[in-house]
Image (cartoon, rainbow, N blue to C red; front, side, top):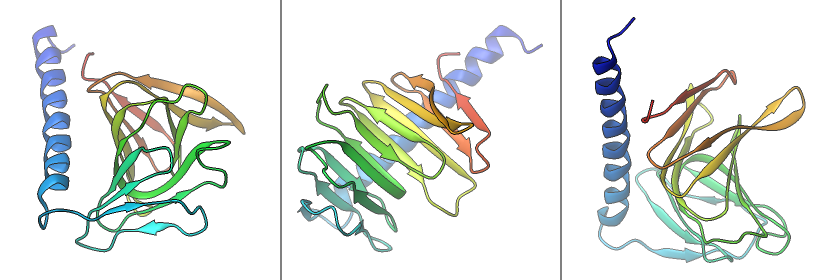
Length: 178
């Protein structure tokens, strides 16, 4: 087997890479093309889209903030902030979710869902990518997958952990603490 020290070094390297990638994305959100327009979203009818080369910051009816990365789209479910807090993402977005223990915030992507109560995390799930991933910066999130027609909690992520899934739904989980 691999020596224990090498396992720790690998785990630290994976965690450092995840933190650097998230930091670069978060910093780019703060500085691309000066101040970003902040758009308040109330409608659930049409998806909101960011164009190529554009980061778009959205404030949802529950005061959660989402920054869409370039070429991404987000749609709110009907009844958002009243009967549910479900959103549908194609692309990449950084989420800062307001806490609401009665209405969990759920991000739907092609092969899984991310369920949270209030936290900061990133989801990258472009339709044409081979992999989708969720990285957690603060709080905790649940990864929910469909197993034979039944939804199951696959994993609960902790801070600095990342979940990766292939588009064929064979899940991979990388944990910086292992």
